[in-house]
Length: 517
Figure 1 (cartoon, helix red, strand yellow):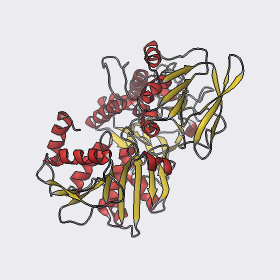
Figure 2: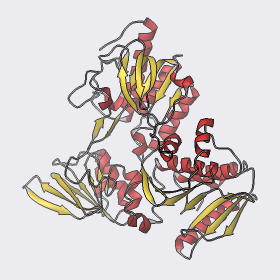
Figure 3: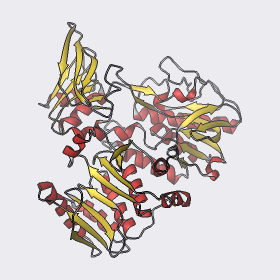
Figure 4: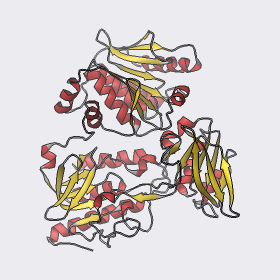
């Protein structure tokens, strides 16, 4: 189950264990239980400080992690924590063994002050890049407060339970048996929410009080490129974002990044984050930007009444998936309507699904889903599939993928959850139906610029208009990436525009001039 490379990596981490850890396993008598037992046996064989005991738990198969002779940690894994959740498993092991979680004193005090019993259960998929943040945060809360427990439930292994609870998207968190939270969140946001406060992560005074040479709004490739270029010029640089990663986190594989034959989107953004850290870029994560005020300095407002200041500002907020805008889409969001096949695909194992959109994203999604779902139907509005030829040929080679052109989706049907869609055949006007359990929308992007309140010149699509130096219509404000009027939305183009904007900002600061488009 663990390949040699993973065993080697895990062995190095296990050398850091401070106290013996006991896995208490309730495997049940299913084939999945055998898999979980085999997984734990392989892990325990790598360190004399690990052992396995038998027990009775709520779910089979599942296991707990507890320091030997200590009070229960409150952490349970239902399923096998591989994939993206392997990091959550390793961190839980180290923290249970005695390594203190890396949290601020303020957050620690908030967690320890909770005096009511909170039992969290997180449905996750092993391919979900958003899930580990939530799982690790709730694990930390469990470790620091005996009133709190947390169970990570692997949706693929517990598909029946996920269906019974109408779990159609991950991460989904239940609190004391009631659905409580969906989607990505930081530890600070979850702690605040558990205390009944607004889910806003605090910003340290030493960060918010500083005047930055370059303040970058956004967390994707354009923002990362701008940050590295600015920092290498010796400029004090900060990046503020709701999460560092952007659109590439929803990309399984990238094969058109020149000089790199293949890289997964998450790995690319991990590399960029590491490079930003190397150049001492201040990362202000978990924030929602709400406004921009021109002046000297330029001010950026955050949700929660915090304001950041920059001598120059670079907007690189990217874009989000476009909605179809048909009846049923809003009603069945997270109940069969999804936008990230990489995250939510495992919940549709053995089911019929549809992908709306025949561009690169849509065909990549179809290929990805073909290995999970029973059947995939791709609906393209135009008369021809618009994806790259190599992707189209791959999709056509798959027996469980149908490519349907001239298809205009008119409604999404369901009863509590999606069970079908209706589309019009644009070649003859006929109305047709598809029986599907899930619909993945991949029809393009909408720029994340609504927070700007028209303070910058934009085109009719809401894209920020920039000049050849990345400058906008507002003094000392630059923009880059998918939120701008760039002709093509590609990672490599976003990176280039981020570098351009950073150099434009450097030029403005070096010459002490006001730069406008």
